[in-house]
Length: 448
Image 1 (cartoon, rainbow, N blue to C red):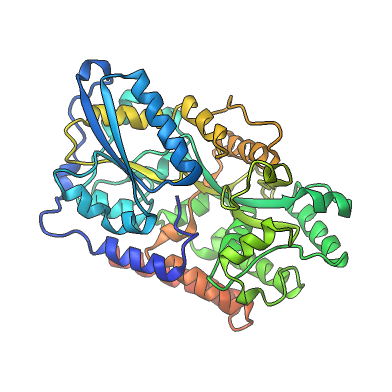
Image 2: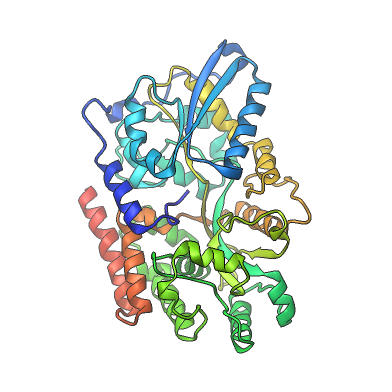
């Protein structure tokens, strides 16, 4: 999961807390040694109770409740005590919980340097390499997703090295939603290319509609990052975010993406006074019928079962025609505490979270499945059908790129604040890109 949905201020506070949380007694990197021997025989482990801490509520909460129940039925000797906490609270206190002997065995962390990197470097979470080998994660998990869970053991590089967390059979993507009823009334087919989208936006504007429902008051970057995924080379984006200093923001289409976003704003494709519209209002406006398209995280519109039949979703292919690339990650990085007394059983549960059964349970609760090609989605749910198809395409194309703010602990603020300046006409696209490089390169230099 990315922290893009949160306000910049909240994220900055959470980042500051997580980066400063390696308190004395918090462990050291040598605790990250992978277990010498592991067992995948859960039934032979005897009676085991595991503690799971997560931040999932609503449909996500019902999903994890079902997955836990199914795992306990499969292994009657295992009981999992699940605790749900507010996302912000968990993100800022997880390092302290993992230092507690009575803390969770399994937890949901946030990806990137802000959270997972800090926990791994502090020796608070287990190195999972032995389990990756035992369960075949190296071959079964798409490479671009696997990289999101790996750090070198000297903690100078993210995206390679050892496993410190795992994904799950769910995903969160950035893509394009469309109001199916509006497209039908306008005589427009769902776009299949960027050129189709621009033609549709122009036609919608001419008909008096708002092409893209959007608000920039709290620095939403979904439009920018969604567009960048259509223009940039997948490998270069991954390399930039994972810290290759030879790759610059100009190499990952950042200038082109911000220029196109500005072009749409100048053409009146965003709502009037969009700079004063906050994220929640923009979502409510769109679900309430305003706007034709919206760049958004999958699942974030909060569509009811009935509404899902009226909104569709498109993961547009790259402009170059080289496949489909999308910004996305599992909605949480699953970690095992270095203090867990039952790491083998905890690892078995993490493996189960990636299973087709967990993916089907996700779809049953209206969530986007991943790594589950045979999942069955309710036919009446247009949006979930489209979202599931998009995830399957990214799985098969190995087409994921991480959230761009993972490239540094302060990148989210840099993107959001400077995006507002560009949209206000106070910063050029070139200077925006230069600010992005300055932030990422300063972080790399400070990391040594």
